[in-house]
Image (tube, one colour):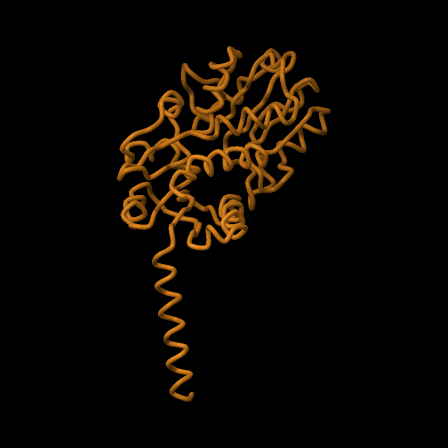
Length: 268
């Protein structure tokens, strides 16, 4: 290779490396998140405007919550999303959380403001707006499948809107119902059944929550927070009964837009 080409290539590599180091870094914290919606959504947002050429979004797939310290210590980290299974565990690593996130007990968005890591919950906005978009109202009760951070968001929604609800778990507890103890009375009238577990997520598409589907009536609504695949087995079973069924894509889109709005104060 002629010397001048070697010099040019070395210079380009140096510039590219420096540019990468200077990028404002955003990203998603989670586990087994290669499929994630967020990276594609925000990368497209950043690439759509020259103003954001210096911004980058990546997945932080960590095996334990302690891995967040490395992410937080990166000087260019400017905003983060949080997903399963860290929406609750992340709280103890933050300097402050919003009043609503505190009431819910779950954080899915982090802003870096004045050297402070501040947690917010935009899932509640996403869930509320997706119900409106799908004209789901006049709900008699809600059946929440799962006990994690997403389930806490849906529980908060029910309390806030004075809607009766029950939480279903595989673990015996005075606070929860067991799947194998569910009967017809749990599905009477217009019940919104929300899958807050990762069951049915790609690649395990042949799995679904272990509900007594044979006794569920068609007034019920199936809402799966899973969005990959677009039609889960849980949704398919609901539609076979005659129920309305939707996935979590719109909720994700709405909550992501709210995350963007929260981060926007750092864009200047």
